[in-house]
Image (cartoon, rainbow, N blue to C red; front, side):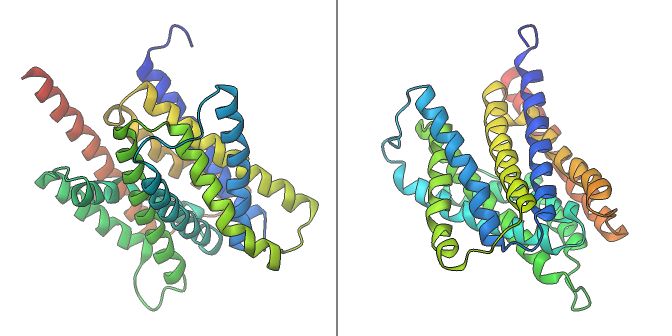
Length: 296
């Protein structure tokens, strides 16, 4: 990788992250009838071990950056809600790709929360893209009483919203100088502490394969987290963020081949197209704005 420029490294890392998270979705389903809380615990337990080992290896402090502790609590709380929403949607919806695209609403929510809490300006064209993306989400959710998946769909949508709030906190802490590995550590620790009591009193016995699948959920989640963190150290979001939507493609492919031939319906495909089109449009717009400011 020595002769590869940083932008290419960033793209490769974000594609690896998308592949890891699609693997996580598949293993969540393959683990079967294990309660969602138990799945979430194992997802974060592996990440906690890896984050701890990484901080120890590089002899970095576990202490949060000055002023960041309260934001770690907020990020961890809303982030955990986001994981619950995503996991519930992934296990209950007929198509894991539907759950994945609803989770990919998070960048649009990040724009909204950044405008509200960080006072970052949202331009009219960005606001229009957000509104159209919400319309695309409605094609996936299909908000009618006839839709038997309405509750999982709304949970997936809420999970994307919570993830957007979490990323806003991560962005703010990054601006304050917080170490990304410390952020992963505290989120994983918080999630394990919150979900552990459920396992103590309501542990669901698992088969050997279910143990393996849940450990793989954790490995994939940790790999995805660290890969996406690395991606944004190599290149700014405006240059590589669009490649994160490859997760939906990877998830749809794995759903078809490994989860009983899953195929999203026509309305979902319409929603995918609208959301991805808005993401591409935002990607192009942000890069044009950056070039315009650079020229000035």
